[in-house]
Image (cartoon, rainbow, N blue to C red; front, side):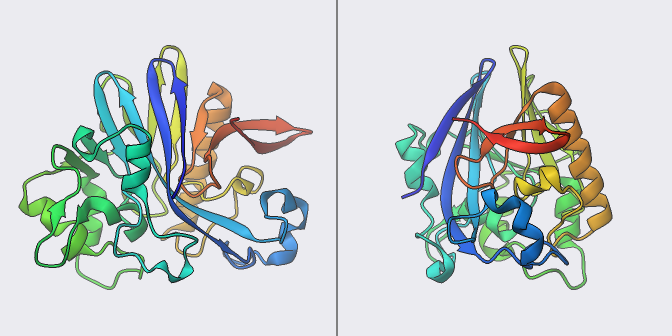
Length: 281
């Protein structure tokens, strides 16, 4: 079973939800960055020198609405590399949230590990996991995945996770700077995918950013030029990463990274002239 962690951002509640996780060798995760380059950053690795890859989603409770940001791996994910079977729905329940409670499902982007729990059930009898929710996606993102041509292997499983939402008329396409309500809005952070966004929360004088895959690991606060090989536009993704990290540190905003080792949330701080990440307790 995964974990959950709750914090307040002004009057809004932000809950990190762990679907599952893997551990892997750090060398090669970032393009051209081999194991030796991690030596100054061993504190971001396990005692065995491995890298934790979390698969997490976030609940925002704001202004009377319950929003889920990204839907994780899903029940059909291959468990062979995972430390446990995906358990997002059980973790939500432990956190006091029913699938019926979700009003909006917000996507940072549409990779398979961010859309997996859109539906449940066997092929031929798929059901929407969040039956009362509108599923919100940036038009630029959906257009990319629906356009002709070869796509990366981490594309969404369209027939399973997107087609049923479209057929049920529950999918809304929005612009890059979509506002879910007066406290939650999208922040364009393209590069990982063409329509990638982060989500900003502004409430009661406090701020937070849900990063999606703009930042995969805390080490990128110190090494913002490191990028994973599956970024579609590394120049653009690096530009987006620098922008959101500069903004967050300037605003003393909470950062929430779904692939950060759990509890996934903390702050950008500068220590001895170098930016780093400090987890919330």
